[in-house]
Image 1 (cartoon, helix red, strand yellow):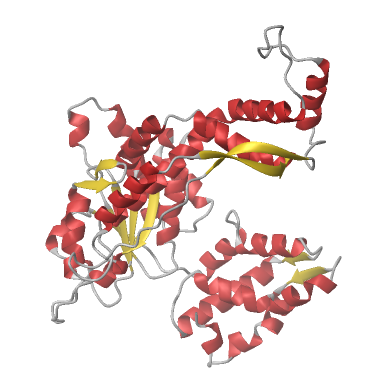
Image 2 (cartoon, helix red, strand yellow; image 1 turned 90 degrees about the horizontal axis):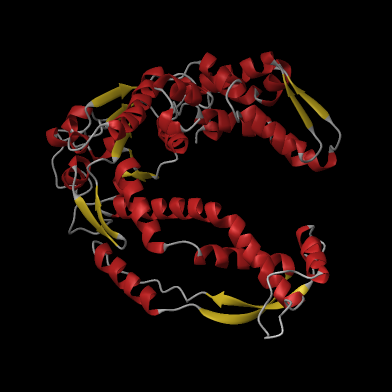
Length: 443
């Protein structure tokens, strides 16, 4: 089923496979995604007036804020970019200009659209690549006038069959392939990204691909020629147009650490990474036009999802204009020990499955018991309680410590089965479970 036609309940069900809890946040992003489909069904001019409802997610680190946005974008197959709000500074100061967010989003959209187009023409491109390789291996049949004939002779058919079966993969041939123009990287000063993009586009237009003979194996030649033939069948103007439209209508920007650019009233000073960045973000979030190397991009219908822990500040510390651009606010809950159990055992690509798969490559079998997983979750939760609470990220730390010795000796333990029960966990993590000095487990 296409994500664009999924109901909010179906979207939440998909997110549940990877993210534990946080039902309110899942419902909010699911509704936002469904509203995009609903908007497309509305007739103009009303469709243009319907703006996306941006979301502000508030919660401690490691509870799933970033993962929710990332999975949503993957589900929607939409252009998605995650950026740290602290990387940007007010225009005129040293640092990145906020407009680069949209330029980077368009680059991602171009790449996505190109991959879709290549997939669409791959069969034709592979057939053409086969013909070019066969022309090198065996001359095409010609008529009395010297023109190539469409009908293949028996020898050519035999070579085509052997080529498709991989029997010729290691044979070396010399073919003419396009020599890519040298990439010219122009280093521009901070704040001059627009001029740098224009210069890069101008120099790229001056360079033209040239044909160059190369000696390659048939397997390498087939891959190169397939890419070249696919490029010939893609209309670049149409691709750019579709990519720009996709970025404008379906793009998702995830603004992480937005709490770090919130300025508390009692703190004075001219921190250029705070209020100035908030003011610069305002036009992007409310809708403006950004100049990119592919053309002008409107941000009116791009969905912005902001997130922050807000430990030292509050959402009300953001400037009022920016607060108003994030009408949907969702608070994410801290994770409990039982949540850790579910993260370790019931999600797709859970940590236990990942480590079991890694060690299976060395013919070592890991068997996690329910008691072992429960004890592992309790220790991770306990360490979070006694030190900094870094949420589910703590599980990575304790899992690495738990399996450190086994991972080191896996090469010499082929055929071994290791049962991870409560006793095994206590034995390996006794230090973490009992000692107050937990510096080694603080990320």
